[in-house]
Length: 298
Ligand code: HBI
Ligand code: FE
Image (cartoon, rainbow, N blue to C red; front, side):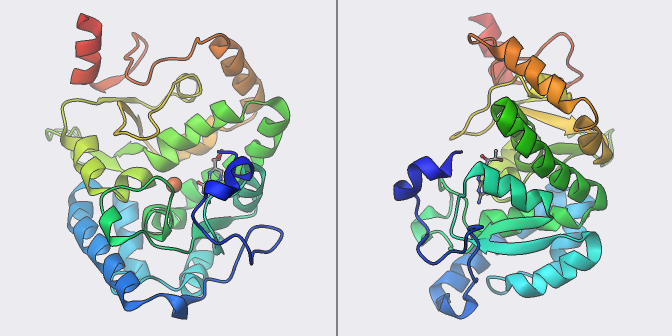
């Protein structure tokens, strides 16, 4: 989103930040209530994670040891840097897209410093420290995923010039935020689908829904298709996309990415976007969701 336009609506404290929107985490300012809320959010997710998350995520979440209190970004950064060269920087919340892209391109992941209110256990609009840290940071320890995220940041700068950010951002949405990977036993009811997207992993409702619920579609990852596909901002997703391997992600941003983004923009001009709940003939279907079935019957 264009944070610059809506700074007055954003919740964080943007008054003391540096030019690149980073701040100091000021860990000692968190209250006991803040840490307690983190512990409750963590406890609720961690049991689900063992069943529903991909192995790479599970290994990293345990390696970081973040269950007891809100993590110190500096300590986690040192560990992460040794794995993949990524570091964590604290930010007051959403930041302008050009600044966001620039951090990613330099292997710095911006993590919001504040935590939600107790009455927001289940839902909040803007990302907080639980979403950003618990959801995003562990996957950055995976080398292939880490390379994809840095490449996404690099691509962003050209996409701004081409006015194709909307289409590039859909790729991030359906992978870094809501991606699935085929990794488990493929003969089980869930077809071996596991979660790696942070938007799912930081939400207990969506963790269950993304894998077990009959309503959403689950189809094979196809970057050019995703660039043309709408998404739901404030609701459970209608479709999830499944990668076979995290290397698929990096390859999706290879060579001619900017020509493909411009083609997606042209295809979507005048409302030609693929609806969020659509299943196409060309899709590799793991599960044809009830949402799409109802829509087709109408
Ligand atoms: N800022 N802190 C933060 N986190 C995000 O995920 C984020 C952002 N600014 C812009 C943005 N995402 C998206 O607009 C880009 O991915 C396109
Ligand atoms: Fe996120």
